[in-house]
Image 1 (cartoon, rainbow, N blue to C red):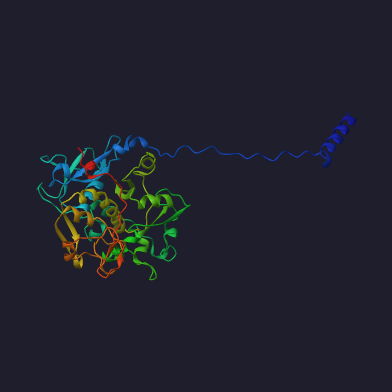
Image 2 (image 1 turned 60 degrees about the horizontal axis):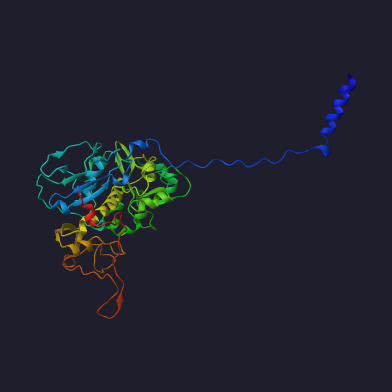
Length: 400
């Protein structure tokens, strides 16, 4: 028995000697499976055919063949529906900040549609009325450059959801958008994020003229006012692109700040991932700047209505006064086009002049190609098209 134990011990020693050691093979890489297609829970709450889910909002003083003020995606209900609070504020902005005493009607001779802000419009079309006079040709704002910010007149649904400020002792340490927000305020991702302006940087002339820097702390003295922290939000780079192409806005719904998709695109993915999804916590973001962003996006959706004139429009004149009159179709079209300085004025003016004069309103002959000036020099065109979400003809939007 002792000999057997000794033999086993020797065999074990020989087996573990360096000469006879066979190291195990290196481990093989383990690949993780591919992602499933991006999805978000509760997608069944959204329409199954988003590109055919729209609601028309009509101007009652024009014939139904030519009165589609807004044509908005209606993604708030599986069959078709749009958040009442978002719709009524959108129309109010287009009508020059008419938020009090306004209502929708499903029929010209029908009764006002009375709803809570968080209820859902389910009809195919509505008239937006600023009074009980269905013949009132209330004026429309032709472009963001002509939209006056409603100082002291924000809608109640927006004022009901204030955005908290950071404690004073944190301001010096969290003095840029990355340190303040840490991650994309839509997705929560920390990689590939960047600063997004609420009022776009190329609208700085409007920002300054409307005294928007009075809301929130001032930007650094070496930076433009439009770069202020209250006019910024941290977004993932692809979300930033979608934000800047007016694919979605940020609005209050049911006591929360959520992403509201204006244009779902050709797939359901964007809508499924982001529509009505609550944002990451917001702090030290200007409520007024956020509202101006809503206006900047939604006014472009009324471009088809404005250009299919004649229309009664409200434009900003000298000293920021509002001039209201009926414009013929060709002038309506010119007023929707901003020039490269961000102003919608059709004539070349001093950089400090951000409004259109009464004389200019009488003569909107803007060059569309290179043309000769009196001195014989060529001047380049001063207008450029805004990228718009709709490239179809006005006739499409006026279909029944």
